[in-house]
Length: 328
Image (tube, rainbow, N blue to C red):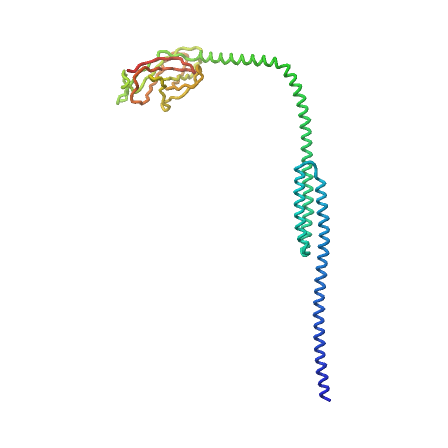
């Protein structure tokens, strides 16, 4: 009898354990099912919102394209900008579609859609601004056209008056040219008349001794420098003041003896209208008087060549004196 009671107790314990395990298992299964149901509900909610956003995105995109297309006009530059804006919107839509495809980036997709709205608003504002500028330019163009037409009419009227005055104008121009020619000729005559003639041109061959003193020489081989003197003449036409005399020394073969380091250079000839090389330039404070002007030409040649030399003196671009001398 005691054994039967003991067996029943063991059976009851075992049954209790089995029941407890079954209850625990059911609890775990129920909890897992709850988590799965919650996850499914969340995913379903996200998918539903994602689908709604896809529909909203497509609507927003088509409305933006339509709004931009309505702003298209005849201006090619403006239309090109609109095409570029439409392409940028297309790229933005592709980006948002990618975010909505997984259903996990809904919040980011919403942010990008808001950016897209701002982007469209900016495009529209930009196009409106450009249209206003174009209209302003058209207005300026119309004003310029009217002004051009008015100026053209005035020009036609002026041309009529000009044609009537053309004969008188030609006569005035001819008279003006004649006066200009006479003025140039008169100026040249006055300049020529004021050129100071020189007289008594002399050249003294010299040689410098070791002591520094110079002595006269006759033979070319002993000459190392030349003393040139000339006498200015009275000229009442020439105004008192500094006068410049250009002196040319021509060697026996007709070459101008010139060394830039010793003051040689070029001057403009009024007689021949060309540049002439000169040997030395001498300035003098002329007072309408006769005065002797001298200078020494020391070219440091060692010796001069034998033959006939020529001396020419110029003032105000004219030849005012000439002479020759020989070195044996």
